[in-house]
Length: 317
Image (tube, rainbow, N blue to C red; front, side, top):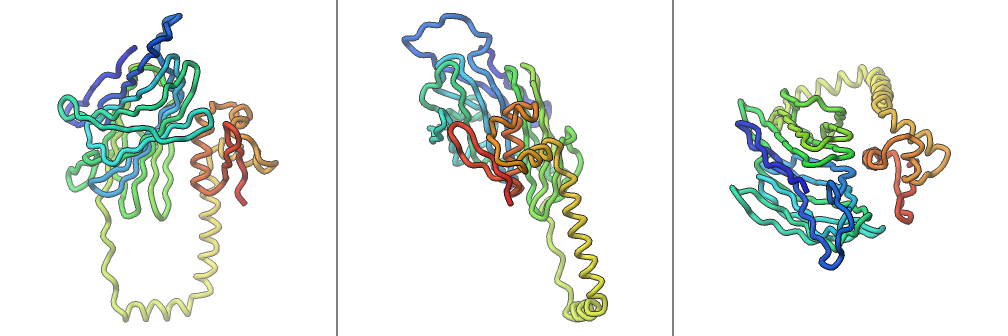
């Protein structure tokens, strides 16, 4: 089985030095044929939430299909792993799995996730969440987020999401250019998506942003009085302008809906649909449909209800 290479970019500390899977084989079941890989990575997604200048919440979601008897999944990282927790979804059942962290060579941390055997042909989803420090460095008065990963085997869909909270401004560099940028009053979201990743491909993400912006001083009461009087004079016009602004804003938000989201909304207007059926209707992979529906659910556009081994998707009123 090929092992992910530990590779650090020159002059920078990599966010994720390597990705490797340690597969434990059944003791009494012989192999009948050789496999190029012992597992298939259907989808691999990483979500970063910047909590403060020091802390970043990291969530890794994986969809894998086993070719052998898998009982352990291991990830290596240069950075601290604080309060890790993991869940596995298997055979229409979600349950917590055991997570242990061990320091190995050079301060690298190995995150071990142990679970009941995943039999050949079975597919499962694994979610690992933890808080880490040190992914954000300061240079020339601004912060810089860096993430690096290299895969040792093909990946069907690779997705990265970075959320910068309110009060921070994104600056250059942004490498590579994000596939999606969404700004709201509470956060700034950047996303990158790559499909059909080849073995050996590596990815390096850099995002610069300012520190938390300090609110300006409160103006004097006299200024408030002047603004109040001016507001009374032009109040009617201001209300009308506000209504136009809100309508324009809604129009912009609708315009930012991706083509796939618009297609899903059109399908759901005719009635609820099983998530497993949407991939066929859209002509995309099930992994991509899952990511799109997750985003739409976060926006409050849809609701998903568990039904058997899939979800039934409803248009939210």
